[in-house]
Length: 87
Image 1 (spheres, rainbow, N blue to C red):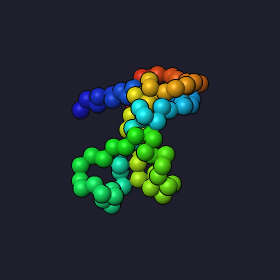
Image 2: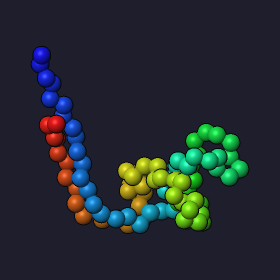
Image 3: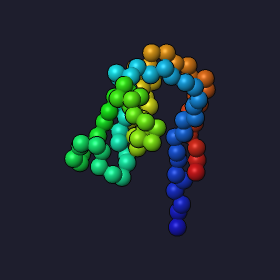
Image 4: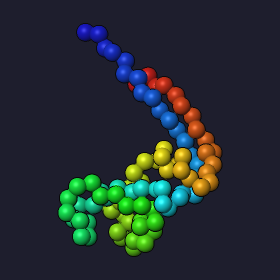
């Protein structure tokens, strides 16, 4: 039986961003219905996210790191390596 080597594309990075609150989006991942909204994908802007108390912020994740980086007001990518890994 032939074994096929599975390759993985790995991106390792570190850095920081000052996000544009109007162009940064968060997606709801909480278990309970979100206040006043019935079902569906729930997205809020960074401006809305910043008004939430910490216990509600934990119900959201950054929607897209790449888009957020491209729309950032300022950023520095300190480290970024791309490698192909033979698993």
